[in-house]
Length: 396
Image (cartoon, rainbow, N blue to C red):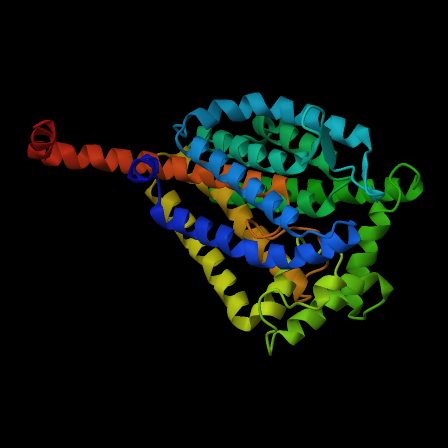
C-alpha cells in the first residue's frame, strides 16, 4: 500500500477532494438505483452499485495513468485528437441511435464491448487542451485576427456545429469556457467580441433552419425553447415535471429523510444523474448540499493554485481550460435543481451515475495533476540543488 501512495504525484488536496466526492457518490446513487431497478424490471439494486463502482474504478485508473504523463505531451496529442474527435462526432450525429426509445443521438455505441459513449464530453476536454496550446503559442505576440481563424477558430466552430444539433447545453458550456480561456490567455477583447457575435449569429441561423425543416431535427429546438420559455415564465406546467419533483425533494430537505429514504427518487426519471443533487438534499438536508458545494469550491481553489504555480504558460492555461468546466458544470447542475437555471441535462461531476461523465472528468483531473506533478518535480530539484547534502545522504 505504501508503494502505491509513493506512485501518486501531484496536488494531494485534489486527490483528497476527488476521493471524497467518489466515496460520497455511492450513497445517493445506490439510493436512486432502487427506482432504476424497479423500472428496468430488475429487482436487485446491487448491480447498479457495482456498475457505478466499476465506472469510478476505471475513472481513477484513467486519472492515475494520465497524471503520470508529462503534461507537455498533451500539446501534441490535442492536435492528433482534434481530427479523431471530429470523425467520432460526425459518426455519432449520423448514427441516430436510440436508448430505451429515447433520443440518443449524442451517444455512440462501442461495437466490441457493447457500451455507449458520449463523444461530446471527450470533444470538450480535447478542445480545451487544443485552445490552451494555441493561446500559449501566441502569448506575448501581436495577434492578427485573420491569422487565428484557421488554426484556432475553425476547429472550434466545426466541432461545436457537430455537437449543437443533439446537445445545446454542452455546446453553450464549451463555447463559454473557450471564450473565458481566450480572455484569460490574453486574446484581444475586440476579436473575442467578434467571435461571440459570430457564435450567436450561427445559433440564430441554426434555429431558423431547424424551424424551417423540423423533420431534420425533430423536437430538439422545440425542447430547448420550451425549457427556456417555461423557466422565464416561472410557471410549472406538464413540461416542468422533473423540476417540480426536484423542488419538492429540496423542500423536504428542511427535515432530511435520511440515507436511502428519498421519496421523489420514485418520480424523478433522472434521479441518479441530472437531478441527483435534489435527492441528496432530500436525504441529507442542507448539510449535504453545503458539503458538496464546499468540495467543489475547494477544488476550484486548488485548480487556481496549481495553475498559478505552473512553470509554463501552457501549463497555466491547460489547468484552467480543463479544470474550470468541471466546477462550472457542477454549479449549473445545482442551479437547475433549485430552478435558478433552465433544465440542461448536465450531470454532477463525480457524483452522478454514468460512465462517460466520470471518465472524462477523471481524464481532466489527471491532466491537472500532471501539471502539478511537474511543479513538484521541479521544486524537488531546486531543493536538492540548494541542499547538496540531501543527495549524499540519500545515496548513503
